[in-house]
Image (spheres, rainbow, N blue to C red):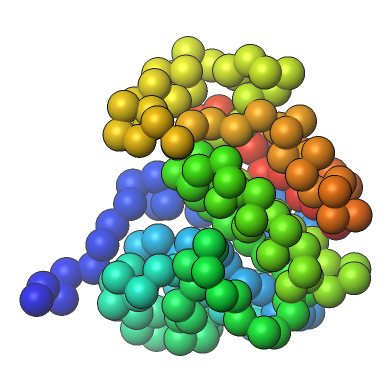
Length: 195
């Protein structure tokens, strides 16, 4: 068993722009559930820079040891991570904010819909759901690199792929939530904010 921390260069690159958006939309103190904490880099760094939020990371069980290695940073303010498999049972708590980065194109469309449905159930009435990643607009890729990335994802698993922003909007609308803001971020990514 290695104690080397998992590392994502993408997390390192995008944490600053994501923080700017979170500061805009998560200004009120509250609880935040991070869905799919991945390496744990975001949880450790963002929680340190957003001390007014109670940051609750979550991921599937096999990723939690790596997340905990990042959360051992003295600056981190994140709670111990929860086990959360989007397709199974969710924690009973409700949250003021939900945040997920680079998960919607990894999950199947069915799991994305489940994540939106359960997420909306676990969000307070005035809560916000923030989603970072690449998205298609009007059924079209926003860049050649995103198109190539989508092809690569589908070669790994045909159920993966970059989702259409409009499809995600429609899924949220079914649960009474609307698109409040859309932020263009570097490397052809966006943050969609629902509430």
